Length: 189
Image 1 (cartoon, rainbow, N blue to C red):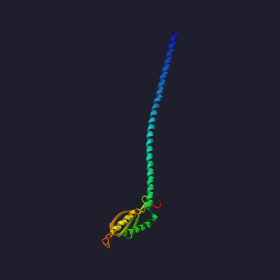
Image 2: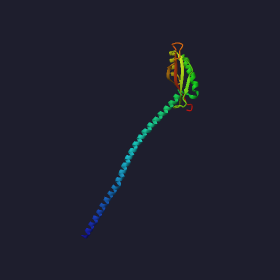
Image 3: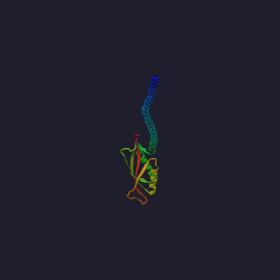
Image 4: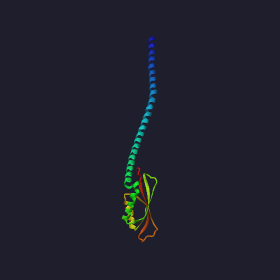
């Protein structure tokens, strides 16, 4: 009997040790698993957030790339426009005076002394040139002259037309002062 008790005692100790080991293993598992699990959840949430940011940034980069292409296209169009319609500053006056004279002859008007005023500093790569031009002729001739300006390869803006009070030889003639603007391109571009 004593032997049986000792054996039972050993079984209890063994079972207690196994149960204690099991409890320690479970507590160790929970002690290591829960922080690892919460860390994993945090990392998963961070990855999802970063993936969303990457997607948003890809859209932004795509939009910026589209705008860059538009800006390059606009710059090319601007250069083509300047080359086609704007005269370089070095040759500007030499090109404008004969053109204005030709337009006046085609329209059949008399033009007097033309006055120019050029800006000192270019804006957006062009110099604005103000032109003050007294003209005399009948209504049809003046309108032909304005149409010639509009259809010219040179870019002209008609700012104003004012009636000159000077006496004309006949009532059919108009004495007008035309205020025009044209542009010269910056030679350094």
